[in-house]
Length: 315
Ligand code: NAD
Ligand code: UDP
Image (cartoon, rainbow, N blue to C red; front, side):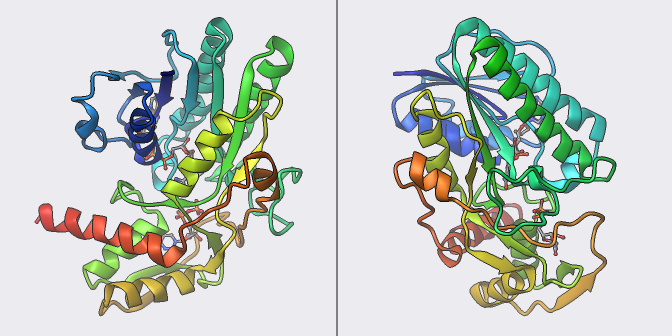
């Protein structure tokens, strides 16, 4: 039984991770400030005596004795991370410093939930870990992209300077049940619009691409990375290489929900990346042949069913 700390454990990915770690027989300590997380995501775990929750902001120091730290605390959707961009940078950078300082003191292994956003609007396709990225440092996405890039820098520096046992994963667009219904991300937006027979809002031409990963595939890659041999620190891409245009996603959503929604085109947001697809050769090689198992259709059906219930229960 390991003692595991999950920062951002009440969020979309974090709550699934807490559940999985508990099911695998670990003790889990979740810390969260509930900015984009929700107690309802973890309330079903509260009866488990091996689960603890602390309301805490990672920009402040934290101390606990644990064996592993998953550092997930950070708003992930553009409307949430752009709401208070200075706070977003603080969460990524000061959160990383606080958690790395803790890992150093207690000799824990620490995993950083980094992002495909470190590649910005990529000029090489698909993206490999050796690509340094094409990021605007002064745009509306910069608080997130540059915050995450600086966090990666801190992870590497704590590793080199203080021998902290680090792991870095770069997560590509992930979806699934428990996504925040109002976070503006494309999968949740399209599902809710389709279920309500409202216009499906495509920003820009709809020809921009993303590669969508179901949350269970992410958790498998993430936990394999955490438990991989000490010598492998990453960064490693964790994503589904199946690439779709946003228009294809909208069409699929209408088909799967049987919706009467029409598609409407709105202006593209600033610095919206035009394409994104992970090269996952490194993950396959280093993480025991890890690769995503859940095709988009199958994952969407599960996610649609989750949002359908949510909408019905909320009237
Ligand atoms: P989310 O917004 O649902 O979860 C983030 C959690 O962190 C929330 O519970 C939020 O309340 C908490 N949080 C935010 N600021 C905090 C602070 N200062 N102190 C303590 N807690 C704080 O997002 P998610 O999709 O679950 O993403 C989890 C992590 O994975 C994030 O670090 C994100 O950058 C990364 N990631 C996610 C995706 C994706 O597609 N979901 C892609 C790339 C990277
Ligand atoms: N998008 C869209 N309509 C929406 C929400 C998003 O067309 O209602 C587009 C968005 O402009 C981007 C893509 O879908 O090109 C993915 O957006 P999301 O915010 O989910 O993730 P990210 O841009 O961070 O990859």
